[in-house]
Image (cartoon, rainbow, N blue to C red; front, side, top):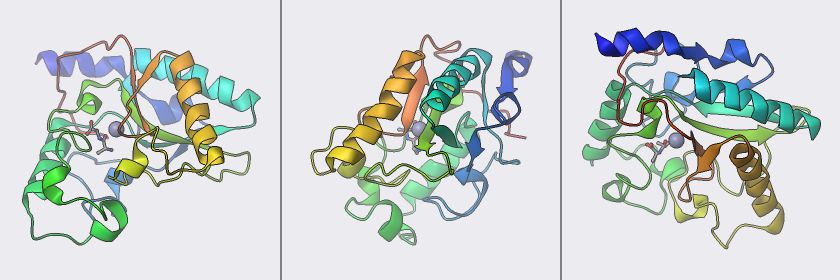
Amino acid sequence: TPQEDKRSEFVDVGALLPNAMLDIRYFGHHNFVGKPIEGYNAPKCLLHTSAANALKKVQNAAQIEGLGLKIFDCYRPQRAVNHFVRWVNDLEDTRTKAEFYPNLGKDQLLGDYIAAKSGHSRGSTIDLTLVDSKGKELDMGSPFDMFDTLSNTDDSRISPSQKANRYKLKQLMTDAGFAPYSMEWWHFTYQPQAYPATYFDFVVE
Ligand SMILES: C[C@@H](N)C(=O)N[C@H](C)C(=O)O
Ligand SMILES: [Zn+2]
């Protein structure tokens, strides 16, 4: 199929960037669904080659400042997104509410915080944070995938150092060609996207 032909244009970022830390949350249980997500058969970060090469530039620039990358999610198959949407629509399952969406109802998550058609499925989008030289995450004022206005990049409740950390990540990413997302400090899309209108569904393996 046409999608399978393009699979070869995706690269394993863990192999390309051996110094990057990977914490692929949707492979395991520590995520807002509370269980492994469909389509993640390995804890890998796959990205289109163009985005992966740009990420290498980000890592080099971060390294000069004594910082490293910690990656939470990359290419996301459409079947995984469909799993998210099924979870959103199961209003009775609120097991992860305290950690991941303490101040919003599940009915408020779709769109701004969880997309039914996600840039991640197009292969040029990544969720990540910065770590110090010891591998400790910088304090961004809210954890990855906390669906709350507190995670909006410019939320005014965060401290000056938390804001500086968010802006450090944003600057490193935009310098390499990634566009930020104002609702989630961790989410960036490389521009131009190789496939701006294709929602891939091959599994992560
Ligand atoms: C679910 C979260 N990590 C995320 O990536 N949100 C955006 C809006 C998306 O689903 O594309
Ligand atoms: Zn994202």
